[in-house]
Image 1: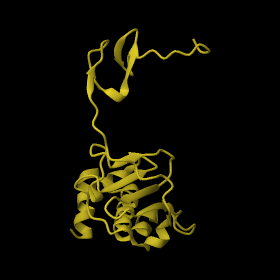
Image 2: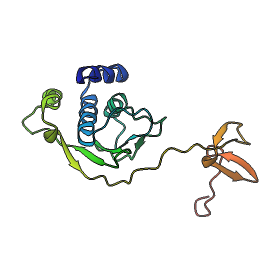
Image 3: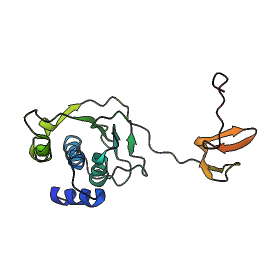
Image 4: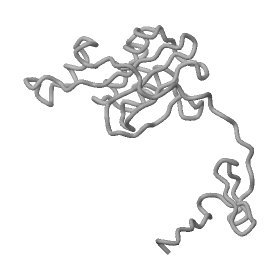
Length: 176
């Protein structure tokens, strides 16, 4: 798929054109270039994003990293920074968006980010988070308070009953 088709896929997925989508789009293409990536069909490509902005939608559309597949993870730091991992080669990279030059007015940044060189848009750094393991499937239990099905990893025992985190009553003797 060529860049224009990928751009359209990201537009269709996200719903509109904006600077955030451009950032994620460019980060995805740069990661593909640096790590020899193709769109993920499963978990062979992983992205850990440090924000939950529009840029993440472009990464989902272009690279196929999704929360549901377990290959899109959030490490919320409020940064336009993305760690990409290629499970097949073991290579990884962290891309951090650079500020636009001071002489580029806000209303011209979209065009700047659309046309600038990758090296002018992103700092390329080593990843600081180890590649996460593949997504696990958990046995589910019915919460004995609300009756809702909940993954075992999120079940707690309260008065001998299996309960979900919403029904769990945290105990803290200092803050009762």
